[in-house]
Every structure is written in structure tokens, then in C-alpha cells.
Image (cartoon, rainbow, N blue to C red):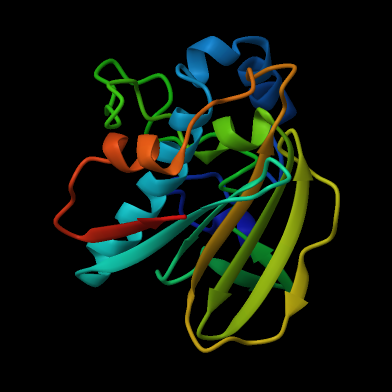
Length: 201
């Protein structure tokens, strides 16, 4: 066994690019996996920013509500782990496969809305579009998804001054009801954290 099949699983299985059955399960039960709708989806993405901030001893994230219904969450962490397999860039499939830390565990980790954390695949599965861009010290990449399924190749982008990850998504309103969530509502729902500060606009 060599290459990505030999890479150790800590959060996601590197050998699988997309788990369609897993994504279908989420779409079949949106109320279970995104209770509270858009708020819970944003908190799922911010939970990853918290992970990055804890690893680095501190960090910042910005949440931006777009006029087109998209939501942009950008952090200044390390950028999603991306490796090379036979010269091809392979990004950890955090939005298209199960997060093994949080699915099917008897004692779930709760987000600040009081509901279980499941991982970013819940966000992508319930979004008509999601764009995942990661910026690392050795390169930057972006890719597009529809309901968690990749619809573009992983494309290399120009390097930037800062590392980090941006998740930009538009919830599917046939699965997640349109949300009256405002920036003030989100600010009130975000629990204080010793490692991550969050700006909302």
C-alpha cells in the first residue's frame, strides 16, 4: 500500500474523494443534521476555524453575508491539509466525506446552539453550491461542489499573503428554509472562545 491509501486517517479518510451515500443520508434528513438551519451550518464551519486557532494558539475568522444568499466564512489558519500523490494535489475531503470524529459517536460534541457537531460535510450536502479555497505555505487551491459532490477540478490559485481556509456556500432552500438570520443574531449565538475571535458583516 502506497500513496494516499497509506495516509493516516485523523478526521477524514484520505482514500475517498466523495462519499455519495453519506451525503445522500444528510440530504434525506436535513432537520437532523442542520437543526436550526443556516445558523447551525455556519457554526459547523466556524468549529473548524476554532480547531485551527487552537492548534496555532489563536486566530480570527470573518463571516460575511452575501446579497445573493451566500455565506462566506474565512479563517487565518493553516489551510486545509493538501498533499501530493504522484504529482497531483490531493486536499483532505472535509466537505465531501464523513468526519470520523463526530459521526455515530455515543456522546456528541455540541455546538453553541446546543446541537451536535457533525462536520462540514453536513454544510456541503445541504448547499446547492459550495466553494472551498485553502491557502497554505506551499500553495493555494480552490474547488467547487454541489450538494457535496465535486463539480470542478482542484485548481491551483495564486499565492496570498496569509494562510487559511474560505468556505463560501449557498444553502439549498428546498432542504433548508430561507433564514431571517441577521449578523446580530449570529453574533449573539457565537459562544466566546479563548482561541478564536469572529467578525460578522
